[in-house]
Length: 169
Image (cartoon, one colour):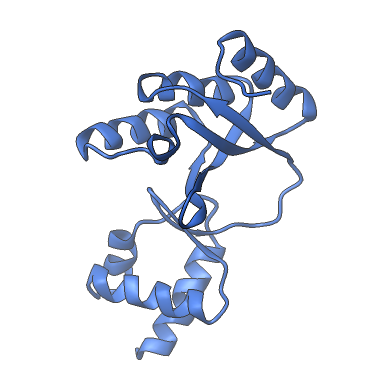
């Protein structure tokens, strides 16, 4: 199979999945190196494909019937898991994290956290990799795009975060 055929098949794989798929998994499927997959994804994105890179892999986000809202929060690194679990426990999905950088403007990191396992894996990875969270750039101030099945789930999360002193009004 040539590179163009492989890229077409990568799009098919991504369109048939609701969860991210890692570059390593794609490289095994197509019997190429992970670096070839990274290059393929870059070429596909440059060609206009809406491929999202998350910490857990690649995906094409499909249209949703969920309610979405951007929520501004503030806390230190030690409360990250508590904040993310609050959203999950209220029935929300954490799509991303956004900070305002003085030079680059808006910086956005895709999270795509849907359940407690996703949050635990995210926290575990940040500790293992000794990763610096984007919110460190803004002294703890950041936004999340949140999806909920209904407005009430998002409002409940906001109420709890306000009680915990994390919500920015």
